Amino acid sequence: MRASARTAIALGSNSGDRLVLLRAATLMLRRLAGPGVDFRASPIYETAPVDCPPGSLPFLNAVVSFSYAGASEVLMEKLAGFESALGRPGSRLRNAPRTIDLDLLCFGGQAVHTGTLTLPHPRMTSRRFVLAPLGDIEPDMRPLADGPTAAALLSALPKDDFMRPIPAVLDDESAGRRAMADFLKNRKAAGPAVTALTAYDYPVARMLDESGIDVVLVGDSLGMVVLGHPDTTRVTLDDMRHHLRAVRAGVSRALVVADLPIHTCDTPEAAVSNARMLIADGADAVKLEGGVSVAPQIAALVAEGIPVMGHIGMLPQHVLEEGGYRKKGVTPEAEALLLADGRAVADAGAFSVVLEIVEAAAAARITKEIPIPTIGIGSGAGCDGQILVTHDLVGLFPWFTPRFVRPEADLAGDFRRAVEAYIRRTQTGG
Image 1: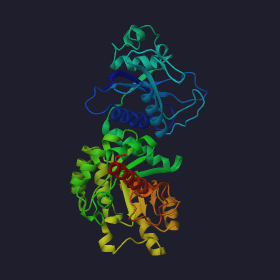
Image 2: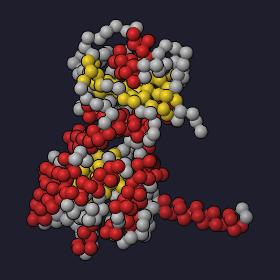
Image 3: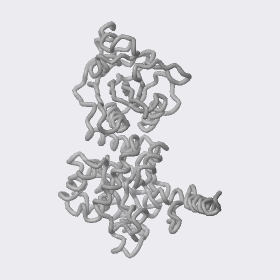
């Protein structure tokens, strides 16, 4: 196993909600570091926009440090993925205003010079806005194994009269979860469209996260897809917690949302109690079905600092009452009820809402009328984002494919062919 290297990463933002972005990035970094790792986060400083275009806003800057067992090049790739997730474009002008900047400062005291990576960071020793927060948490760290400490490097720099600490905590997990949810909420106005897929285990969750998905939903659809039930109504909270823990182990970048299964949120008190367990197991947010009828539950969850994704339209937990899956919002009266549901969910404080099997025109109108992102499934292209069951997307549940799904792969076919080839090879001694 590769030995861990103590690493330091500088965070900066001077575009958008700077504190929200820094906290969201810090939560991603903490999860990348993993449980039980000595993770340190500095105070936050407001600093002048050094070498930036005229009119640039001040930065918020900070540094985090932790031990990392992978390669420095892999860590750099992870940081680039985090930047992309938080709205920084892949190609950008040097020193242009940015939502987030994650710079790898040093890595176990190593000297690295490749075409894409130089360590220690070549400009860190001249930047007080880097060395001051680094010195706050790692004064004895040596960016080069045989070089001076961070404290010694800082003492050699002149004072910066503009630079000042701000009274906010960077490494606050609850604030980080809310920050990630708020960032997705802001995508309604800023774009791009929100992407979401389901996961119920570690390998799929990790692949989704590494592929750049925005939201990983641990959905109660696991009842059909994983457990073999005919619908979601038999899924328990214990089922959800078991699969959520596996998913959390594979995700550091995406927002992990967990469904509150049937009858776990019948009252605001039950919703809060059960959601706390899901948050403790690694959820960043919870999802619950219903509109006006569950607005008190949503408000209670939000008051507890738990981000909430709503779900209106076809409600799978009510499929037995409905007698099947039926399109919603087909008539003007039905559309008006859905719009009232969407407004109630938004007013209660949800950061987004799923629209399931809603008439496309109605879904588009609801999307225009409510202030939070709509995430459609079988509801047309007029929503602010889309979600699918991953097994449907990749053709891994061949016994049933919803009519609105266009599979992008045939993994069930590949799986069967691989198994058949293995049987032939084993039986023929090949």
